[in-house]
Length: 118
Image: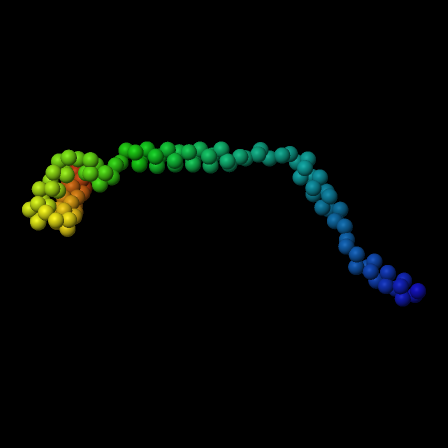
C-alpha cells in the first residue's frame, strides 16, 4: 500500500499545469482593447481578377492572328496559288509559297507597327 501512495505522490508531481494567471490577464486585455477594423481582401482580389480577365479578353479580341486574317483573304489565297504554280504546283510547292507569303506579310506588319510607333 505504501508503494501505491508513493506512486500516486510521484504522479501528482508530473500532472499538467494549467495556464498561468498572466495569460488570462493578457486575453482579457486584448479582448477589451477594442477590435481592429476587419480588413477584407477578397473584394480587392475579386476586382483584380475581373480586371485581368477583361484585359486579356479585350486584348485577344482586338488582336487577330495574322494567320487567321490571311486565310480569310482571297487575295492571299490567289497569291499562294499563283506562286505555287510557278514553283511546280504540287503540295510542297504550295506549302513553300504559303510560308514565303506569310513571312512577307509578317515582315510588312512588323514594319508597319514600327512606323506607327514613331
